[in-house]
Length: 471
Image 1 (tube, rainbow, N blue to C red):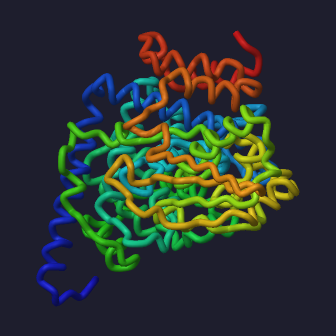
Image 2: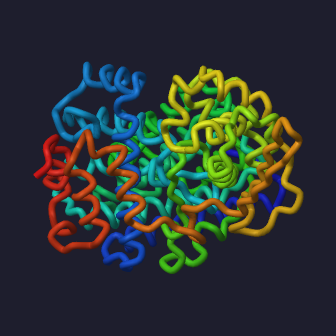
């Protein structure tokens, strides 16, 4: 029980609880109706992109070792791990293994309206649960879109002035609980108990763990997937949270702000999946505008026959979120992905912001390391409204005194400049095709909305996806 004497706080807490109940009631009703076609297609792109992200990271040493540990204690074979060999584990272990991989490479989709990767939080648990049921591919897409909605609206309802905790730590259990519970089919009170119970198990994961390279940050989506599935179990037998739990956790414990109307405003009209973004650069999205500007400069460098070794200094003017990415000597690949100096230097040297710019060997590359130390971060002077709220101005000063400058006001991949399906397909082909040749083809058919692909049982679709030879 929280003792409150402030009447406005009591009113806000009560309104948040009421709106959370309405959100859960809407979610359960929405599960019974077809998705609007634009929403279905967006959910399918998220499905494609995030499964691709799982496979992309599946060969990372730590991901393989974590998967091996889970495999040593697995129960009945229920769900696939999206990694070479396509081993089947019990749903809890499979969800945890896929949850470990899904954000590892920083290639998963994200939500632009608030710091939240709702697809990555919901999918590991949701997909494991779907394999244990009679769910069709359409059922999976519907549960994904609705779980994404619940998760993103909770993130919007509790904004942080700064980010003391990382969104993976606080929202992963919530997204997983929403995904698993909706995938099972449920009443509104069960969904409320599962999601609020999961919120009470949010982690106090510092945001700085990402910039400092603590790999436990990549485990928060793994643990969250396990918690979400267990909350689906426990809520079914009456062990769950309350309608006021969200307020008490986020405002009372984490000190977040509160906008209760975000939980219900425009429900069923303004779908959160439409506000997502996709990434072709394997780093924090806060650095993407700087990477795009750097790529323009790099192309000029090549045209003029100059070399990155000629660069004397790099200045990156960036937005407040980008100013957090200050690490100059990253000690892990995660730290490199959250380092503006590394992203700027690696792009200048290699001419790419893709996965190969952030591998272990690039941390010790003398060309990149030397240039990292020449990067200065400055605040961008005049930041616009969305979608121009994450701009970057990159300047390269050469040894002869010449300076080149490029501006990117909004990185591609968001709702204002979305990647087309062909771009996402090519990305998944590159990251996953060598492991599972059928996977890009199967997921593309789902995105296109082919009836046979949508009607197919999810369990059968997965079997086809993870065949290790092409059909």
